[in-house]
Picture 1 (cartoon, rainbow, N blue to C red):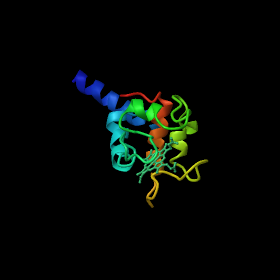
Picture 2 (cartoon, rainbow, N blue to C red):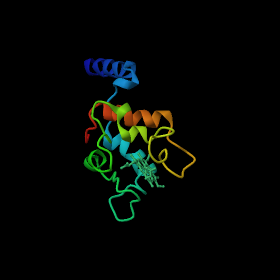
Picture 3 (cartoon, helix red, strand yellow):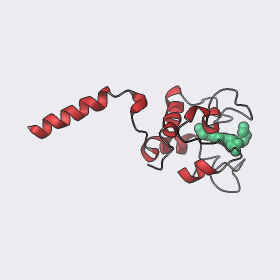
Picture 4 (tube, rainbow, N blue to C red):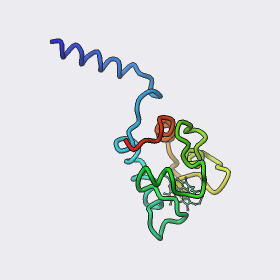
Length: 121
Ligand code: HEC
């Protein structure tokens, strides 16, 4: 009985939490998106068009030409996020050549993950 009550309380609490406060897991939430929409062009190999590799968190944070690619704690100013929005300062909005850009929720996932420290979680 007590366990059920505690469980219910935890569930209600989790449900009430604003989306922005919910922890984003790289492996559970972000990786599927990267795999579906980015990795075919951003793998660490000689066919990668611009050397930005997204195979794992370490590469997402450290590869590429920009020093502000991922600024842990500041998703909106991270170049990775800026490239997902219309009219980035250089090049095209990602995913390039695709009519279907990321939804607001998907971009938000990147922002929250970086805001929360861009962890390999
Ligand atoms: C069809 C291939 C393709 C796909 C899919 C793609 N990209 Fe790119 N990406 C490129 C190319 C080509 C460039 C270089 C030209 C440019 O910056 O516009 C690039 C550049 C970038 C850069 C800038 C790298 C740097 O060093 O300046 C980032 C960040 C980026 N992509 C992120 C993403 C993300 C995140 C996704 C998935 C949502 C994605 N890309 C999907 C081909 C792709």
